Length: 405
Image 1 (cartoon, rainbow, N blue to C red):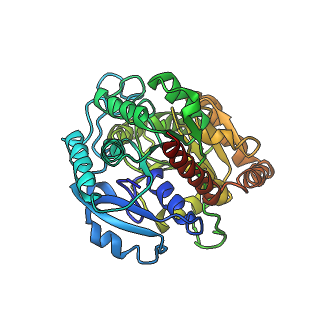
Image 2 (cartoon, rainbow, N blue to C red):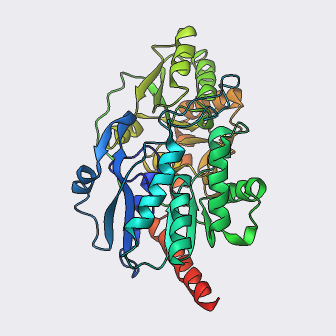
Image 3 (cartoon, rainbow, N blue to C red):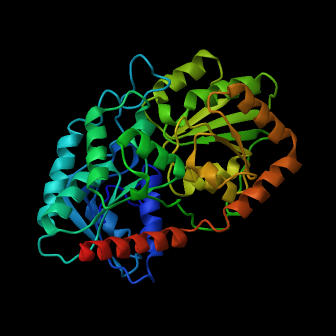
């Protein structure tokens, strides 16, 4: 298994998914050799050594072995730059972090050399950063490749894609025996933009670790209602639509605060927009949070809003429901394939409707409770074990097909 992000050092849903899937395979007769860059990146560009990371994973099950790859891959989205002319909608058109593409190639070369004395049956590559390594290993050792698409360049950058990243994604999908997409929404993007036939794609929704958070943190809100945004503050996640909706709510309600958790290429300009509107005491920015800080942010919220322009899945919406928070979800979100009665789905650009719904939820506790109750029922069977079983089935299938050919 190839990755670049793994808890406790994460920047988004990818690391959470890798952790959930690998740990859920504990009793499925699968041994995992997890290859990660020897220098992995944590919060806001802070570097952590692989061995520092490994020491914090001592409770990992015996079926997972972590192996450091002697290469350095930074968080590819930390220094991504927005498009100068379409700042509200663009992603990383200006290129990702420095010489990232060259580092990805180096990672591939190191993985190929590192595995020369190892025995393995299947290659499972997470995210585009690992696809060249997956292709190289599959070619040299004649093993089937599965690529796991957690997001595409079209999600991150809209129509202003980085051509080099697109080509890496396209080649990875072409070389794979099976492509795992995190939603039907993502599967449609793969088919329409990468020319992949539907029969090659398998949809595996992300899971969630079912926990009971009730009463874990005591929150003091001074009588305010809290509306939460949690994610990278980048065009893909729709932060400007959140701010627009917040402004409309605040024209009608006084005791409401809007919390934006996260960071990204649009964070400085979003802060400037809030300041220009004189809303700096009502729309607050926390920066990147992790662990218990994120849980505390959830526990403070009365409404969770995910106005993503393009969201392959959207684990945060599920986490919010788990913590008894009613959710407003954009229609362009993969998790909406699971959540129906348990969320309110709105077009990401419709800030008027988002604002109206926030006010309605805050003013109607019974409806808020009904949304949470329905949402919990809809996520009841959403587990990492279910997702892992599907992945293991794909492992056996690609191995059988390779033997047959």
